[in-house]
Length: 497
Picture 1 (tube, rainbow, N blue to C red):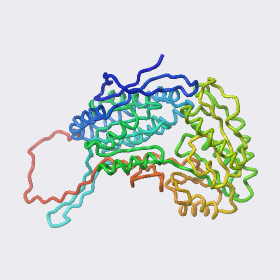
Picture 2: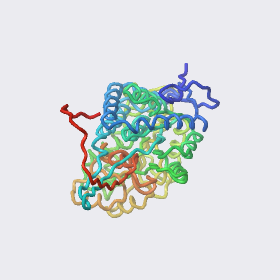
Picture 3: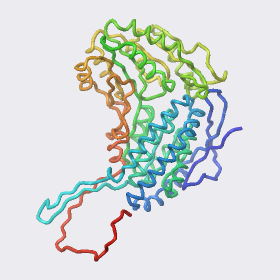
């Protein structure tokens, strides 16, 4: 029996029929578990009209009342996080602990957004000129769209939606059609938290729905996370239609390991960062750059740890789950074949092995290559799977040059016990997020997430203060009042309302 997954517009499930649908799988079994309705351009227009009608009242709602809804949503999400995690595992395939960690990291952004009364404070200059005051305010944009990827069906929407709503906007979320249920479940929590109907909406679909959001005149801004080619398309199409766009693209993240690093801790970090969530992370480490003579020992340590990993159904206590679809699994397996053919040393072949799950699951185990060179496809391309490549260099300078020459600039890490080398690296590397003995340097919610070069289109990063600025417009007021006035007597204690 399959589940019917449909749009959520105006606080209610859409009741119309759909000419086109998509298939949702359980990646651990390969079975079809759901069918999701695909929105036409016309239906997207209806959702935008619903959001626009709801936006006016929400934008005029006081910060105090908005914050109350945010706090209620935070409590509901925290109470239901295990349910959301189970939906992620069932449709994406990542193990339950990883899915729960995803929801928890997204929860941090909701907590950050609860401070919206402080985050929207403006500046004030009294007597900038004689009896003239100047002050700044930030106001919501209107209807905004969030287009999220399959690899983080809860966390990525939570990077954007709570901040957009807290700032006074109405939101249309277009989740990945591969694993849409978590987005719908979280959207229902907003209604339960007291958010007015129409402020939070979910539409499902493919390119037709995306293009409708990118071109609709009443959508003011678009947040997107996905591959670099699509991120570029979203940015160029959205901006060509007058929208503010932040489009986070792909990555090829390097871990630079210096000879003085603790190789046991480094090997642990490389395995965790390379194979967590089956490598389907834009912050996964896919290229380990080993300096000087340490590569042989480090490769052996990583290999030993990989032998202990158990790949299988995410509900069975395994370390790593399947890939999200059969097509993606086959694509990643193809890269493994290309790497071997190009002359890289295949240390651990994830295509072979026993998997703790259904025979038709989308399995590919952790894979390790050594002696990888920059001309190989396994180095050049973002594989987005459990494939870790070891590149050998002779010096720090050669490793740094390799990283800086890469067209991506999302995340990177250095492992060393030399504080001077670490400080030099953080200043010289041309990457947006840097870890020092931290393999996955995803910033906490009150900082902002985003890379450089082909990993980001637009100049605004996700969440943190940059997220607040993205979802608002600044206005400066110059004011002069020649006569004072007062509002009469009221001895009651002043309250926010």
